Image (cartoon, rainbow, N blue to C red; front, side, top):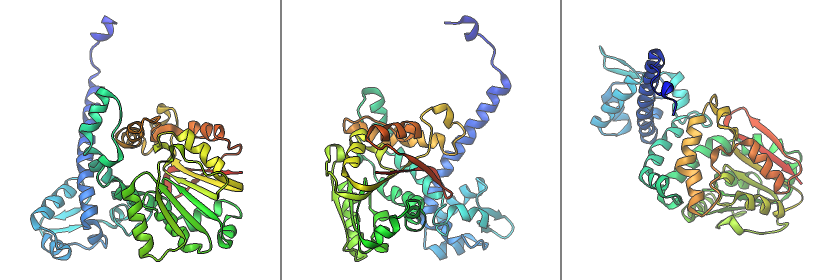
Length: 360
């Protein structure tokens, strides 16, 4: 031990600056909980027009409990998210704030992400036990995770997959129109596949996911929409093998969650037919943590990984790759799985994901 280092005086300015930063983090974290509530309760949507409202007007509009709305408004005012005029008692959500907090913005509603704090916090005790004993927390322990992921992917990929993602792969639109076989690995509730199934009725779509609850919901919604060219199946993909069965395979923010992503990627390569295409959408981060310091979601990616992505993989006896596996490792594993050509693209609306395109 370095005695000189241990007894060195504190840099007062640095100490105070970090204390201030921690206070900001604590306030921000608690504000995220309130943002999550406001999103789920529809309060931001109700105020998205930018018009001033009294508490009574907002309660009347939303049908929510007055006492809880009043306290929520207090938190939003203290966080400088909602403006309040103490003379008139009017509250106003500025349009510039509503742009990032309401469902009027289908690809940029950041209130969606605030929900992760409450969802992941619910398994803190379980994850803490894993710190002590190893292992992982299974999917079944996470309440509402698929709800939040459906909203998250709804912004990142569902709204754009037909008009912006398909055109990135030359000739794919025409092939989908003519009719091909498509598989989504780790489909969740299958919303992206449903968008494609509706747009390309001659093609046949399949979704596999480990969660029976997610698959059941996907089946229900697909039936409700009258989509007869799509099917969903609960399946553990660790030892899955369907050689030369599909023309296009997608894995949308799903590979890093797998117990054995290396085996899944190799199985995907085998499952593609000649001239097949694999699209992997996954977290756009670096495999080196220092490189993620300036990433707009750097700390959040590691937190979600520790509290969900990594631990659910470890719960299956898997590799525990984690969400922050990084584009470098992702590209290396894709090549090891047999993909000789790997193209990485980004989408203007999506700053959290990279799009890996592999053509056989």
